[in-house]
Image (cartoon, rainbow, N blue to C red; front, side, top):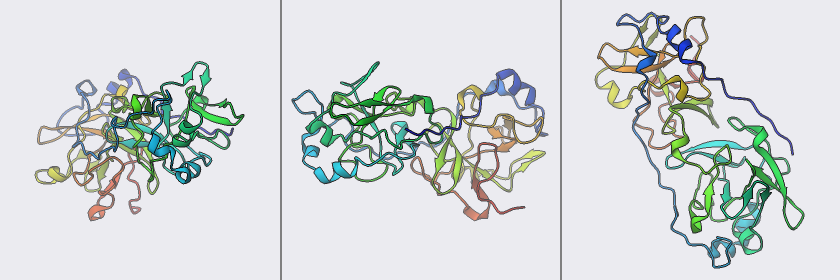
Length: 327
């Protein structure tokens, strides 16, 4: 099995953040990392169909009997996983998906130490095992957690953190999570092999967008933006009053509650600090760039704010605008 991995940026110490707080040239006061209390942004939401409502069969497999008859879907989903990705879900947080965007699941009746599958027959039709061949680790996935287990039929099944990985035959579209909670034994996989949970999503992290590449998201999985009319040096904001209704600020997020963010910034003595806005609101910055979310993004993965007015753009991990015209 091939693997590839690019590790996330290391989180800087609190002391290093404090040392950077006077470097952004803001005129209203010295930013304070000690005031980081967690991000605030409008929580969008899209339903996850079938959450815990479908009972398993009486065979002890937890398989959905209705899905077991869908041979065509099950066969199609038995294809190679390809490059695995991390997807943000409004209700589940970070979810592991295959190269086609299909959600991957784990089964409570399997074991991780040692890896062992207990899903065979009709169960494996409803929950096609993910082949280990050609599965690779994409952005945000630790390649050392990927492995394989030999199934009773001799085929190799992908494991994540020791847990055998499956797809669900009733998940028709990329991003579907209809298998979540089925029979009280099936759960979407998080990138570390644990059960996906929104509680595990950091205050700020990154995700791989198919169009924009690596971009910053908040604790709800919502895209983070910057305003090109703001000033980085000295730090000033041009988004006030009614502007904030459409573009809520990202409140301070402790540096320890981030993943994949460049805490040092692209320029010496600039980094991850808090901006004391003239209106009294404290706003998180990345490389001294104030950051926002967009009220028009209703669910994780939305990028409806990208390019609005030619002045709003998603944020790269180093604070740079993604897709903005060269200045």
